[in-house]
Length: 413
Image (cartoon, rainbow, N blue to C red; front, side):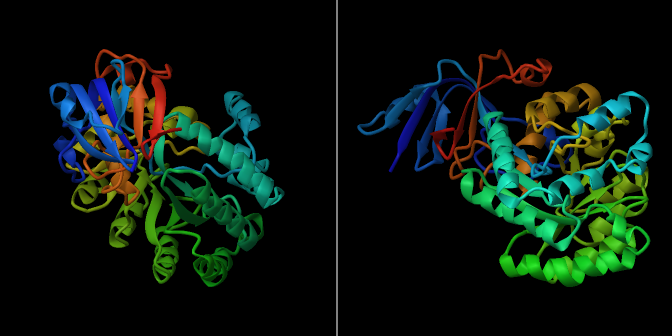
């Protein structure tokens, strides 16, 4: 059994005897031990405490790792990404700078349909290769658990290809990976005027094929004006539930059209985006068990208003942060930057943002008992920082990579 004793830790961040999903004011409580040790067995956290107590673990066969004053926190848990895609879309980035709107870009063949064309033209092996390189890069930036969606196939073959790639990624990387089926990301051109036909394709052909190969744990729908209505979202999610897929939904990115009510009715694990929230939306979400997942880097990249994080937290909601890594609206999976944006632009406290990107993110992934905090029994998925004076320095020094080393299952990555 591999045993490691990590000594001389400046700050052991998010160290908890036990964990529950933090809601409202509890999100600001971030336990930190100074001058600490951490003891690992078989890739899991076995003990932690003050350095004065570390001697009890300095036994024969135990590898001692001197942290040399680094701070250690649990790896980021990124609960909303589109990491599997064929190609970047920087030409649309330039179009936006020139003043073209999302609708203008879509009218000239851009947007989600652009990514769908590129993905359907790429073979599965090549798609896997580029996605694996991308995912390994995210792990080196400190991501220790992740959700990845399909949604750029928009056909039976394309969606299956994406989900098969995600299944291969699960087997190739040492971090937990959750797969979400997002066939309802947009209506493909062939079904532009036949929404019922595409929804039937999702429910009658895609879902049975996905279930037959065990390719997904969750189902998602882009519930928004011009995309899928709340009623259509409900039909699709209920069909997914028949195959054991739990919902996690895109809602309220551009408009409040009833997505919150629909998601809560469907017992969605999380409702994501939430840039446009009414007081009733916030009240309903606060009274539910659903996690509000905020994606500030998408608002940053699209120059949209940021999510009303303070109002959502102060109402008592459970809040997670995620990257929304995708080629069109958030072409970065750097969760450190997401934490900085949450503090700078959404006025989240550093403690709230770090909790939301670790512990709450773990619960949004259904992994609250596995990752997201320094807790005995959890996976030793850890970020070793470069020297930092305080927890607040992590979001304060935006744009600086403060990740020195990453440990996954107790091993250096």
